[in-house]
Length: 175
View 1 (cartoon, rainbow, N blue to C red):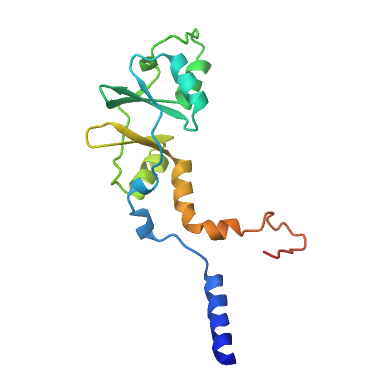
View 2 (tube, helix red, strand yellow; view 1 turned 135 degrees about the vertical axis):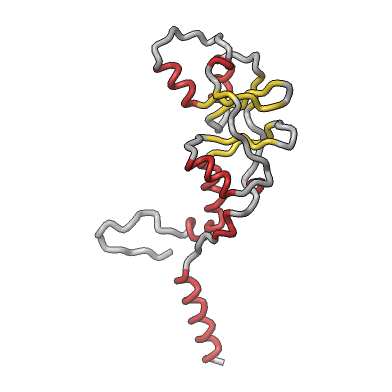
């Protein structure tokens, strides 16, 4: 009996040393697993003031602009910063369409996490609208959302990581 217990303990110890890994197949999962909540949406008749107020009250750093229920543009915090730094007279009642990125690239819920990462990293987008088959915005995903969704696979490992990284001082961790 003692041998069986020792063998099980050895197996458990070996498994705990292996660590977790992201498999390529994980990145082929649909992005619908990452989608939660509806995106901030404004119509084409909205003003810059409306966009700023929306951005100030939502965790997303972009606003989806729609016309007749279809995505026609995206206003990001970056758009607003460039506009404010540009030196032009600041008119908060200016139409949102003057600042938006027109016809942003979108993805569908059944697209893969890998395709989302391609848009966010390789193309340099800060957020990507997720739309239905008619172009209506269902969600907005950012690099943070994506990273959070992927890292949820490692929830236990992240939560049990020592609070302070080792920087040469004696390493004492009892977790």
